[in-house]
Structure formats: structure tokens, C-alpha cells
Length: 321
Ligand SMILES: NC(=O)C1=CN([C@@H]2O[C@H](COP(=O)(O)OP(=O)(O)OC[C@H]3O[C@@H](n4cnc5c(N)ncnc54)[C@H](O)[C@@H]3O)[C@@H](O)[C@H]2O)C=CC1
Ligand SMILES: O=C(CO)COP(=O)(O)O
Figure 1: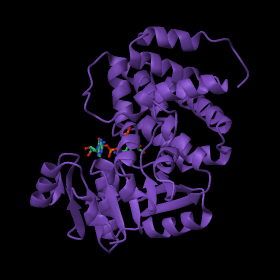
Figure 2 (figure 1 turned 30 degrees about the vertical axis):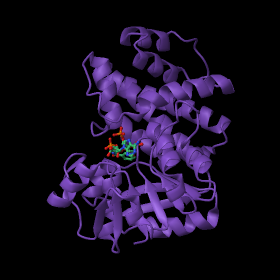
Figure 3 (figure 1 turned 180 degrees about the horizontal axis):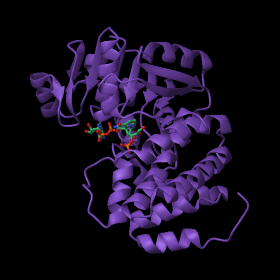
């Protein structure tokens, strides 16, 4: 076994399925022994990815030691859990190729996924896999293109080859900051797009918000070392389009519920909520204007109502585009 996925949520399970279909043995780790027992018994992960069969060449386990032979580990836990996860398991993880598969900014430290992983595992080769893809689409074998970002060009090329399949097409870049900030910030804008649609403000307003949202994503990412072409690629613009326009997106649906004044299931992973807060703080520190992101953070905190947020955004001074 050369690859194992740690975190048997929707995305981790879908990636394990895609890699297993491509041949070879693939590991899938869940921290929960009951979940492992159910997945082994049913051959599925109905808790997180209903309806998708796990190929027989996936080994499911709650023991990380079962994957000691895997040189590449995909870390598919939610962003706000990543730091605790890599610290808890650093002795097992360090020294391998560790590919973060989460999107967001850590609320406590303001760091992105690769910095969190590298701090806990200094001997590891660290990369990030991000871009437009719904787990359900990947599990169905639908064509998907993602970005694999790794500061080490040679390691990135080898991970790209190892993790690409005929339908899961990976593009590579060394611009880790650009790739991970695009993936983190688009979730915040997707919440705002959901608010617009849930609040009945219409498709034209959503297009305006996506465009201005992309402008502020780019401003902040460039200030933090990302490149404009990365923001315009799959991990930025590509994922922004997908997430702001599909009800498959949890961030979009969360925004829709906020906009419509409805409750939303608090156990659902909505990465953009914490990231709005973390990104607002980062932007303030860098002196970058991110009005939409700040407004999403205020909405999530319950500090402003939807009409107040809309009024505040529309009453900003007129400016050049
Ligand atoms: N679902 C999707 O379509 C996509 C998700 N992603 C990203 O993948 C990341 C994970 O999301 P999903 O898999 O969708 O979430 P999910 O909510 O389906 O699953 C999260 C999994 O992480 C596990 N987990 C939580 N805390 C943990 C901890 N401390 N230690 C070990 N395991 C822990 C949970 O038990 C659960 O199995 C997110 O950052 C998300 O943005 C990226 C692309 C697509
Ligand atoms: O990142 C995703 C699509 O690329 C998944 O979006 P959600 O987390 O909003 O469901």
C-alpha cells in the first residue's frame, strides 16, 4: 500500500474510492472504531458519503499502524481539527509525504493547512490538494480537475503522478499560498452567495458578489504571497464558481439558510464560517480591505442582520472597478 487517506469523511472517502479504482491498495482511516466496523460490514460509508460502494482494495481501519507502509498520506479532516490531529499523531506522520486535503485558515493561529502540518511534522514533504470537486461527483467517477500545490517542485511532480487517475486530473503548482488561500477564501464568498440567494436578492446580485468577492480573495492572497495566476486557476476562480452556484455546497446552503432566516444543521462541516473570522483578522493585520468577508464573519457571529449587511455593502463609497 503506497497511499492512505486519514479521515473518513465525505472527501476522504471519495478520494480513497477514486484512487482504489485506479488500482493498488489504498488505506482509509477513521478515528471511530464503530464507524470502521460499519464500513467494513456494509462496504460503504453511508454516514458521510451515502450510496457509494467502497472497492475491495480499500483497507478500512482505526489503527494508523496498519498504514505504516504508506509513503503518502492524505489528511482529510476539517480545517479547525487539523492542528490537533497532526500534533496528536506527529510521531507516526512525520517523514512521509503529507497532502492536506482541507480548505480553510486555522482560527487560533491564522495559518493555512500546509503551515500547520509542517510545524508539527518538520521532516515531512508537505503539499495541498484543493480545487473544485464535490465528494459525491468524485465517488461517482465523474471527471474532476484539482490543484496539487507543493513548494518542492520534484516532490509535487511525483505526487501529481501518484494521485492522478484517468478521471481525477491533477494540475500542479509550487504556489502553495495561492492554492490554499483560494480554497479557503472561496468558501467565505460561497456563504455570502448563499445569503444573496436565500435572501431573495437574485442572480444578478450573486454575480456581482462573486466578482467583488474574487477581487478581495485575490487582494488578500496576493498580500500573503500568492500569485494572481493561481487565484485565477482551479483552486481559486474554479472553486469559487462551483461553490457559489451549487446547492451541493454546504457553505452555499449554510448561507442560503442564513439569508432565509432558517436554522442549519450545526453538525455539518461548513469551513467558511470559521475561515471568515480568521481571514478578517489576517486582512486587518495586513491592511487589506475585505468587506464581504468581514460581513460574512459578522453575520455568522449574529452581529448584523441580512438587511443590515446588504445595506452596509451597498452604501460603500462608489469607486473605480
Ligand atoms: N465534501 C466535499 O465535497 C469536499 C470537501 N473538501 C474539504 O475536505 C475537508 C473535509 O471535509 P469533508 O470530508 O467533506 O467533511 P465531513 O464532515 O464529511 O467529514 C469530516 C471527517 O473528519 C473526521 N474528523 C473530525 N475531527 C477529527 C479529528 N480531530 N481527528 C480525526 N478525524 C476527525 C470526522 O469524524 C469526519 O469523518 C474540508 O476541509 C472540506 O473543505 C474539499 C473538497 C470537496
Ligand atoms: O470544496 C468544495 C467544492 O470544491 C465542497 O464545498 P462545501 O464544503 O461547501 O460542500
